[in-house]
Image (tube, rainbow, N blue to C red; front, side, top):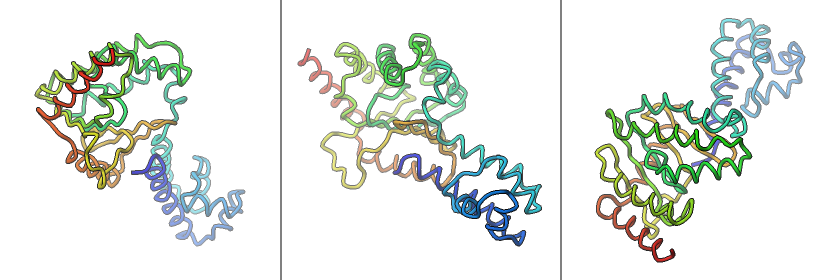
Length: 285
């Protein structure tokens, strides 16, 4: 599974192909359209092959010269979707962590089936307050954000009501290494592991843990991702937040989740791995 490039590039190619179709239907070459638009022909070609993204002005002017003004609204909608697929953290969090976390509440509320895979932290729905605080504090420091950690902790804790109310279902997969990577210190991690034991018994939660000694020949650890029903996939990358809504890409993530799920252990075996991690942590304290 690739990072942001796969989804964004595919969408750029689709938009570019549509623009090329409109140009050819108008009987214009890329050089001729570029001259009419005041652009070099290579710029038009780059857009049509998905190597560059047109501006809104490019779309409007291009459609004007191709006698296709009726296509503008649809093309601009596609352009806005592409621009929103990958958002850098500095843009997403420019108003602080609390606002960014609050913005996701409607998505949590309307989602009925969550599929979550994490290779580095315990996922949000089953985090303790102390663990949330530790994670957010490090994000704030690393990204040099204003300190609204405590307000954001409250937002995240409040969002967890969907775990206990309604017909929401959570299929959660984590690598065993997540259990072995203390965040927030030994006491915070011990509390988190204890909470994970409790959460694994909730009717709304299916917890799978992929053991450290699992054969990863067929599917190795990848970037963490969330699936919200079959409507959207969200991926947190180092540089930003990727939102995938293209059905073919969502299907790819569904296949990957199913493959990872086959490598996980559940029930008593999963609880044994958590208990082992707690024991190892106690030995180090």
